[in-house]
Image (cartoon, rainbow, N blue to C red; front, side, top):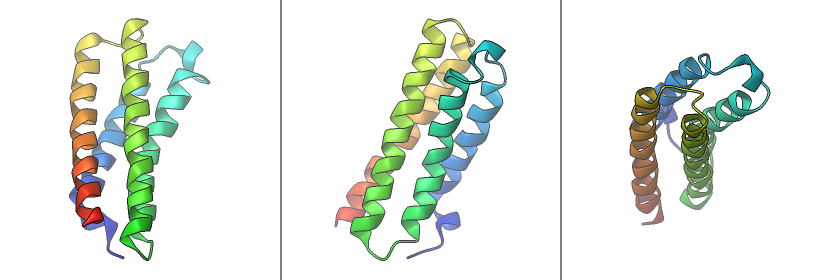
Length: 117
């Protein structure tokens, strides 16, 4: 359909992915196979689904992948909330990632509306 690398939402998702990967290094090693792994899988799913969706042949298919990316953002936000509640990561750092995640969520929602028209 289009070059996903030119999409602003893809660029933002890649930056977010980098930030969350860096943050995940600060999680305790006891969480490496649990929360850390889950956060990484969820965050990488965001740009991957945008890229995969851009390669589809219709807006309807692309919309499905944007929906997957949107759900993955919610998963990351939930994992961050849990990490903060368990005091596994710094609250201030968590807030920054939550704000960025919500921004991506809004962008995905707006993009999905555009694809529907």
